Length: 545
Figure 1 (cartoon, rainbow, N blue to C red):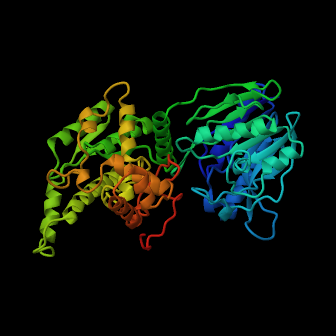
Figure 2 (figure 1 turned 135 degrees about the horizontal axis):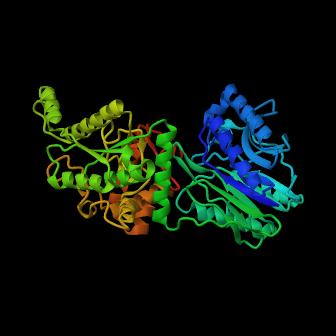
Figure 3 (figure 1 turned 90 degrees about the vertical axis):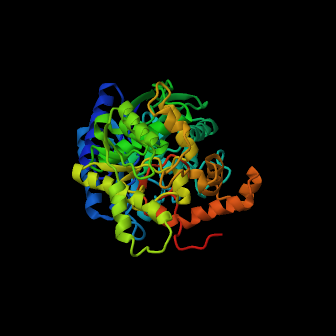
C-alpha cells in the first residue's frame, strides 16, 4: 500500500485551521493513490496544548474537529493525533490519542502509554497514560501504532531507559510487522540524527519497517523540525521529509521505497533555519505581522535582524538605532549599513536628552554617590522604553537581542535590553553567534565585517568592552555548556579544561544568582539540549553552591 506522511504545521487551539489542513493533505494523498495518511501527534488541537486540556470546551472542540475530518476524508484511511476523554475514574480526565479513521468511522483510538516529564515535556501533568495498546490491521499489515515517546525506550539503543515498559517491544512481540509513530518531537542541534539512529536500531533489531511522521513549526519557544522518516528493516532510509517546512511524503509498504526529500545539512544551517522558523511562527501565531529590533551596531542585534528578515520579510522589520552618550560613530554607522544591506526600515532616535533628564531628576536622591552600573542600566531601560513605545504605537512585536552567554551570567538589564515579546537568540551562545553571523555572510556581506571584527561592547561607559566584566567568550561558553547542560561541578570543569578554579566558581555563581532575571525574560527559542525556560526549572530563592 502507498502510505503518506502529512508533515504539517499546526497552531495550538486552531481547530478549524488544523482540521482544514488535515483534510486538504488527505485529499491530495488520496488523489496521489495513497490508501493511508499519517498526521503528527495532537495534530487536531496543536502541540503542546498544556493546561488547555483542562477546559471542557477545548476537549469538546477536539471531538467536533475529529468528526469533521472523519466525514470529509472517507476515501482514504487517516491516522491523526487528538485529545480524547479518559475512561479512568481516577487521575487525569484526558488522553493523548491517535485516531484511525476509515470509511467515515473512527475504527480505533490508540492512546499514548509513555508520558515524558523531562526537558520541555510535562505530559503527566495533563494526560492519563493508556493501560494497554493493541495491534491495528491496516495496509495489509499488523501495525504497531505508537505516539512519539512510546518509541523512545528501546533497550538496544539506550544505555539507561526512562521507563520500565517498552510499548514497541510489546506490540512487535505480539506479531506486529510494521511500526507507525506519530510524533511531536522537538528540535535541538543533533536531534535529527539521534532520532534517525534510534529508529534505525528498532528497524534492524526487530526486522520491521519503521515510519515516523513528525510535527513541523514553532509553538511558543519549542521548534519542531519535521524531518519525517521511514526506515527499512536493514536500516536504510527509504523515505524522508524536508526539515523546517511542511511536506507530504509517500512510501510503499511492500516495495519499501519512497520519496527521499533533501534536508539541510550542517550545524549552522540547521540552527539558523530553526531560529527563522521559530521566530516566524511565534510572531504570526501571536497575531503580529511586523517586528522591531534595537540595532546597536553589535553582532547580537545584527544576527537577530538577519533572522527576522528571513522570518517575516524585510518589509516587516523595523530597525531602531538609539545612540547614547558613549555610543561610537562606528557603531551607529554599522547599524545603518546593516539596515541598508537587509533592506529594512531604519530609525535613529538619540537617548542622550532622556538620559540627562533622568540623571537630573535623580541627582538629589543620588547626591554624593559615584556613578556606577545604575547609570549604565538607565541607558538600557530608556532604550527599552523607546522600543516598547514604538511597539504600542505601530502594533509590532519587539524582538530582544540578548544571547545565551549574557543571559546565563546576567550580563543584561531587566526592563532594558531584555524588553520584548521574543528572545530570538537566547539559546545561542556568543561563540555560536559569531558562527551564525559568518553563515549569514556566506554569499555576500550582510552583517558588516566591522561588526564581526570589533570587540563586543554594550557601550554604556567610556571604552567599555564585555571582557571588562566577563572571561573571554570561548572560555565562558565552555564553562556554561558544562554547567548548564551537563551539571558538572566547578572542580570538574576546572580540571577538564585546565581553567582556574576561582574563575569557574565565579561564573557558576553568576549563573545561579541571575535566575530571577531569566524567569522574567521574554520567551526564547530552543535549539540546544538545555535551554533557559520551561525546560530548565530552577528555584530563584536558593543558596548557590
